[in-house]
Length: 385
Image (cartoon, rainbow, N blue to C red):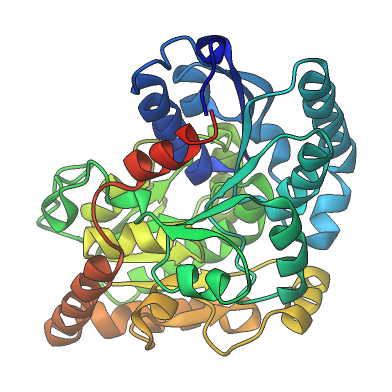
């Protein structure tokens, strides 16, 4: 319950990558707009969107752009420094509530420490424990006061395991007109358009973008194509430029690869097909209603470790939500440039197959719930203030 000092209360909010930064920013805006919350103070870790929404950042997500066990080792110093900064700030003036978004390796540890400080924990955007490392449910049950989930099957999963959970809908649905969204660039009547979404973390881009660029070269051998390369706000554009130059160099067709820094969903909306890194980006492609494949590549060691932990033959979010494989999945060794190009051709050369995937993607959109995720999440967090 709110007391007399509620207006000056602090809220800790932590996001570790680009999509969570966007969701966190909207949550902050909705929470601050509720009656009596005009003077709430937000601090934590996030990106440009959260900072613009008024969050005092103790660490920017650009510093947390590591993936996999091998890659994460190189960032341990940053992780520990950020962890200590957040703990020190929270111990000096405990927040009314801690709002943790995804980023489980970091945030579940932080949840434990928040509980020791007597701070309620609201977890927004669940770790995918239904897919791997299911033993984390014990930590969640002990340290998370409310789990706010964004995938329709997650609420029952948590409730059956003794966790207070609420399905709030998916925040990607907010403010999006879906398949009718205007394209980021004007159509080219001379060429088909393929979007390349290599991820929002530096190391992801290092592993994935070269393969996508080479797949594009393979595709151009079969038809006239132009490529829209999405540059996430958490990735340095210079890094992408260097990868493009190193991979394509003086290859014929280099001029048909265009780097874009706008909304990845806007970029996909202007495409006939997309190569999409596995993760939240696949839902953005699904909501844009554009046929796509999902792929992933990482270091061999990280893939080996992950393969031992991940269960189930389907890894793509869209297919998990649909309960069937409607989007092609190519991971690690399967995701060769030649294989990616073959799958893209299958849809680019067949209007019937493309139309069939578009129809099935519309059903996924319906399953994701109403356009009120941030509003419902803000109401849940507000209950702890």
